[in-house]
Image: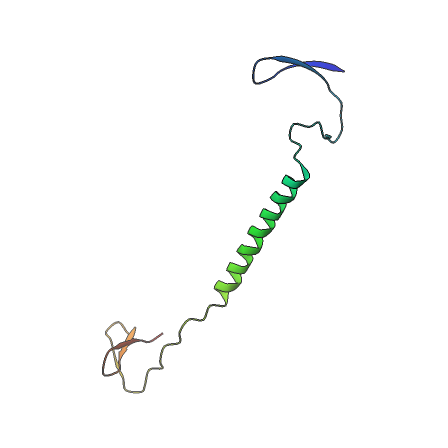
Length: 90
């Protein structure tokens, strides 16, 4: 079956319309090197995201010093006085 198609540049063209999976004549067909480069970029981005998630989840927050018995607490209860400065309770 033949059909006339008007392209974006305005020139008509005639092409055969056949069903299939699209071959090398497809306008969206990329070369194998470009296809592998895109796949490698997507895979690399996924690995970078995975490493970032693992690194952030294993991050060690400093453990504040335990509050000694009888220490003076701030009015809000978030800090205690060590004699030289206020330290966080949590």
